[in-house]
Amino acid sequence: MAFDYRSGEAVSRTLSQDVTLKGLPVAERYDFLAGDGVPLKLTRYVGGTKGPVLLVHGAGVWSGMFMLPTLKENFVQHLVRHGYDTWLLDWRASVQLPLRQFTLDDAADHDMPAAVRRVREITGAESVQAVVHCAGSAAFFMSMAAGHLPDVRTVVASQVALHHHTPASTRFKALLRVPEFLDAGLDSLTPDDASRTPLFQAAFTKVAGLLRMECDSPVCHRLSFMYGPLYRHARLNPETHARLEEQFGRCNLLTFRHLGQMSRGGHAVKFDHGRAGNLLRYGQARPPDYLDPEPFQRPITFVSSERNRCYLPSSTERTFQWLREANGARWYQRRMLPGYGHLDTFMGSTAAEDTYPVLREALEFQPR
Image (cartoon, rainbow, N blue to C red; front, side):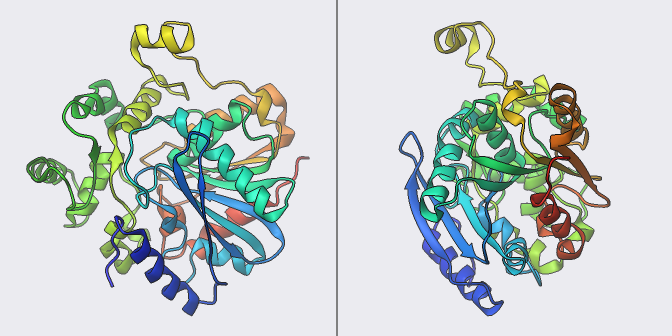
């Protein structure tokens, strides 16, 4: 059965059948509201008493990235096998949820605190752990910086945190204000064929096809144009690559604009509404940043992939060094994944042997 990201029921049913065959416990599903009333979802797999650990996906994707049925062992199975009470969050960027325009400030203020609070309410745990990826990591760290997540005791940050170092091609698109230009007539970009603007999607496909690619998949080409190279092709098995559209979908343009602003500035800032809008919202002409080290005195592991061309490894290096200088070295460690790209950290055919152990061991990191 083909997945349809617009039908949460169909996707959930198919995944449930796949993972049950591989020995996962029955999924517990919880609908809840963000602080501003936006509907969100949590899915729980009880593997034991470790954790609870919250998994947070990036933008334009969904929590299914952590439990691909095309792998011998996916990340959720790995954590469950090692005794973790594992929680998958579908926050407002999830393609399982209705498309909405939002900034990462919205997710930082409303989604992340509500998710942590809900996990604690259900489990009775005093604190939670988190593995956070890409835009989900950026929003999570913004939430921590704002003081919203004191009850998160351990964080594993995949590929980016508070400093955003992107390749020249991404910075060029950000400098050209490509998201702002597209936002004038579109509400989203999508890598699949289910676009609401077929004429634009046809043109988008031709432009994306001009990229130097290793395959003939239009979905893959569009993904690379939208985000930069998300994985090394050699790290994906053929079935995962053939089913990319099951994981990715529409990403709203307001989020792209915010990510572009942070790419241009090099670090996490609140959304720039323009001088007049900033004065009204923030009381100053430029948006404030999130660079307050005080809330980050807790065990944090920064993980970057050596060959990531979406967020350069210097992204986590900069945040790692900045926090060490501000708070001392005892709270922080950094791990590099040799030979990996951005998303193959979780979606790679041999990630269970290469990267999952690194991420799992990071959950057990204690300050020196």
